[in-house]
Amino acid sequence: MEKRNDSSKSLTGPHFLLVTFPAQGHINPSLELAKRLVGTITGARVTFAATDSAYNRSHEDYIKSSTSSDRSRQYMSATRRRGRETLTGLIEDNRRQNRPFTCVVYTIFLPWVAELAREFHIPSALLWVQPVTVFSIFYHYFNGYADAISEMTTNNPSGAINLPSLPQFSLRDLPTIIFPSDPYTFLVPAYQDQIDSLKQEENPMILVNSFEELEEEALSSVLDNVKIVPIGPLITSTTDSGVDDKYIQWLDAKTDSSVLYICFGTFSVLRKKQLAELCKALIESRRPFLWVIAEKSVKCKRGEKEKEEESIRSFREELDEIGMVVSWCNQFSVLKHKSIGCFVTHCGWNSTLESLVSGVPVVAFPLWNDQMTNAKLLAECWRTGVRVMEKKEDEVVVESGVIRRCFEEVMEEKTEEFRKNAARWRDIAAETVMEGGSSFSHLKAFVDEHM
Figure: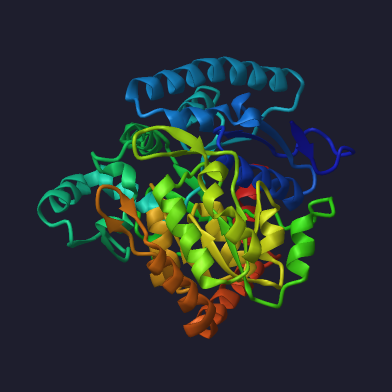
């Protein structure tokens, strides 16, 4: 797919090759960046490249079912081999047609793209689709802090660790994959390869889906030779889904700031016991809610799997009396709706940014990896909501009483404080991408470098 600002111009303007890993959290900000690159300067062009699985989400299904480092390596190896062949042909073809790429931008888990760009002497930049804080955690983990974190895990699990220029973290605030007990720890080498590959660059550059005002300290926490450029939030601003959705009509009938919006993303899955606790909390709270339950399978206690919607069947009659369950919605459109008072979120970075851009307080309900850090930032640093407290028994679970208490805190007790903070971040986020704003200026400077 290629986008161009002005087809009447010559082929001498900047031409960006944007390569994305086939996961929703990578595709969405990459597409938004492509639109902004084209809109930043007259004559700019973007060619967008992704694997076939980006269109059918097969990679996300693969990750869900895989806890094997061998299978992960096989997938990454096949992607690298076939991807290099395809992109080599694309680069050479564009050169022959007198529209050479002037810069390659690629997302996490694709370090071979930067390697290929170096072979063709094309500048490249990594698009980091998580917060700067998470990049900094991984950077320091692979550069001197792995042993300290491992020691804390073994000898002082209730302790805290201080990383340069970052908030103090407990173990529950760190990305889960760095702990040996995590089933997705096989992803750690992919993060390490990505960060190590930056050392091969003469002038390593990272475009980050965040903004200067949001993570000022974290932006100063990485070694000086890595240039970090915050250009976010990369959120699509449209709220028109193009259809007359029943859930919007349902929201229209609710009073302002009265509805809980619940969504755990396209990838994260709640266990059956956790789903039951959430159902109990919703029924006991009696607050109207809109809950997105996608086509995902939950893990039952004995290892069986069933669809999330099937897992809540015994609660469905009572739930339907209070709220609405849907399989999909236009999330940004929902978050911008005046009836929404709280976002119960898994704290994926795209959802986290959408909560800030929309100015909606949150109940942070993280499940794995960077979501843990994002929840810490939302609750303790940006103070737009509260974080649930999990209980560890035979499995980790957040009990219904704890969830209900979080609803009350966000919707009643501290609602004025959280709404004020959320509105402040909403206004800052809007300003930063406008002409003259920090992210707009950073992106403009980046484009100018590749004219």
